[in-house]
Image (cartoon, rainbow, N blue to C red; front, side, top):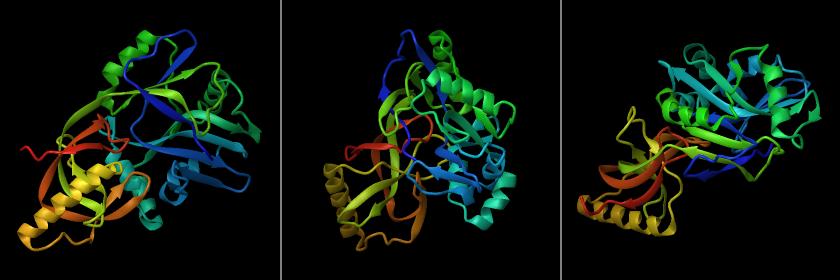
Length: 298
């Protein structure tokens, strides 16, 4: 199932006919209720049903032929915790059953694409939203519709106050809009920061690094994998890795693993001592941090 995408904006759109939803800090997940069973699909297309048996069990209450779009989140101490969502998504089938008890997942649904076999994607968002609420409210947690408002002042209040609960920002949609599958037809306003992060490793090879493994100066110090490096940054990182190796006589060997968004566990090569990079990232942990430059001036 091809999902809708959103274009980043830097200010809150204000116009008649707009709807505003909180952007939850989780993993994008499509819930497909077939006649036979339930299939959970990540944005990448990977099937993750086995990793979330609690959500799969709840989704069996849906009518056959129903498809939902939303985010899977894990709440911890009153806020969503992306590191715990990563842990759930990367779990083996055997481990998933245990984690479902200790770290239960919730599903923040923001669209219904099919209902009882009827394709709704051509219907306006306002109608799809009404059907989504009617479908999920009787069921209750862990399947819940995200909050929505058409009041830009309330949306602005959400934007300023909800980050304390792990909310990334807002998604803005037109009330008359069909579901924009595969297109950036929605708009997203995120809280972002540019700051320095410790580079504790990299994926790929020493001559062609693909992404950096970062520890951000906020949060729980869980390592994160950056978005793919640009060609210029790949060359710069390769040079820094080579310089470090020449000084120590060795290149960091692969063997450590880190959880990457949409990919699960991936191997990486540690760096000791770490490098420093300037990165741009959301106040929450999704999407992956974007590396702007290595900090060689420190």
